[in-house]
Length: 300
View 1 (tube, rainbow, N blue to C red):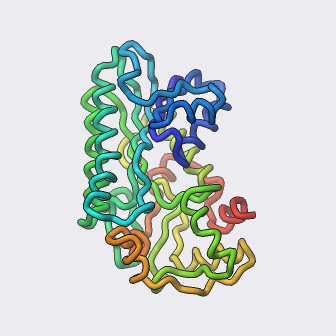
View 2 (view 1 turned 45 degrees about the vertical axis):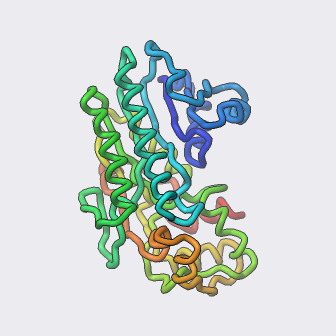
């Protein structure tokens, strides 16, 4: 199997490539990054690193594409320009992938394209949300909706498309890394009232889930890549505190998050109780279904 990964230098992309480089069934990994030289060094020359999809020849044999490209969602305040950057980095890259697929002599068999549980928008109740749920209008929903629709155009080329609606990914790095310092100092705690839901997934399950979607030829459409046990923000904070053996009762007022992140604060102060119904029905088994299991292995 020969695979193309976009967003290859990111938290999830690099973990996926690490996994595939150890898999004898994966013959070649082409990795797209804005810094291909650094990527080649990171993987010790074992990947074909490119900085532009135009570098890929028309006769390149690619069996699968995993599209994980996109600017970090909460690294900066959501100004209008920042929202446009978030949109362009996701929808624009996906459109470029479709252009690549159209010019390849043999299109890939499958595209697993990133999305997020932001598709469901801001939810203010405790309903469990599966893949059948319609989204609530907001910027996050608009972004994910257009991102997914851009990927689904690949079906016109006979390509099987899976959409990975991802929650908070727990691993060494990513969102957890930014949380650890205040919690280790005993300054961690819930955001706002803490009753909002957090849908999360361990990095290993995230990578295994993507690989599962690639290899199971009957699967298509949206899949929630979240653990089967979402928790409230308050539960998340107390569980992280236990993993670190630190108190976790210092709340972060919602208005402070709004000052820091603008409209993007809604992703933290509002929540979605998302469950991976289709993934479970397809027979996927989570290695870390409980939050305490996941946090203990990544913070200790």
